Length: 256
Image (cartoon, rainbow, N blue to C red):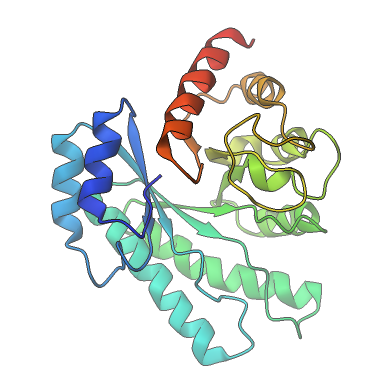
């Protein structure tokens, strides 16, 4: 996964030189702001390096703002993110779940989310880019919300974040529950560890307690026939990222 604080071309070069197959491209300021980058040139760089690409819109876009003008600006940025995804050659653009304005009741929130994603899904379909929704670290009622949202939006995809699903949940997280509900919608997976209390983006096994069971998580993905890409969303020194990638590859080949 690219880090927006660094220059995007250097990030892509590093990823290509270190044995990864694809780039999880965060379209975020400062290093990858939508208005700053020549996205066609980025696509050329990716193709020259023979790297696949998944794009994600900025996590800070406030689609849950109580201000209609702010929400409209966030929607416009999401549409531009889909445009950029098309230009780099990505077939998937991931968005983040923020819920809805706090003054809306749940039913009104579902209606608002449907209206928002109807626009994004149509925009993506016209450009050959599928749109996915990623689960957030806020797990209270989130699976219930997702069931309602995905029922209303049959072409919406799921980007499942294993680390997020470990926060303030039961000892084994919620992977099986999510995949029972949305396996046919699963388009991408992100993986990191934490102590179960906050999103910390640690290497697998680094949490002293409350962390994920990596083998269990990979085995669960296998049991639902997932064979797509997995992003390692790991902060800190990249030696930990490389070590984690080696471990995930080793376990992935072993679990059945």
